[in-house]
Length: 131
Figure (tube, rainbow, N blue to C red):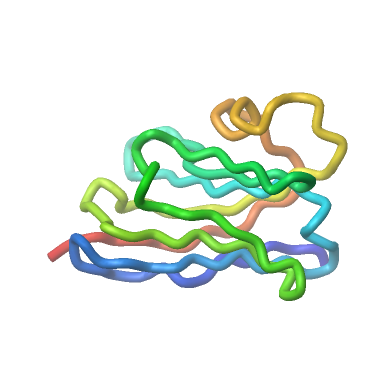
């Protein structure tokens, strides 16, 4: 069965850290561009971080740059999002998505454009930052 499963969300205090995992099954994730997206209540879904399939290039939204780090572990068929210095405004449901090759548009464009990621999406994991 082809699927992406996010895990690692939860409740954390401001300034804390979480590591989200995006595990793929039924397909090989290393040839896919992978992105992390989030949607807060009443807001549009936004692309916050993406990683390419070929050269490992990354994109970060300004709102998370310097605090979040995206990485791959191809042996585990998993992509991670390390989130540090969390703020209440980071509260959202976090989704990962995997876009199959070939990729003709820049990674940043894929990440920030609605519909930029095709292919597989996970069900989401809730992240709540609150004291």
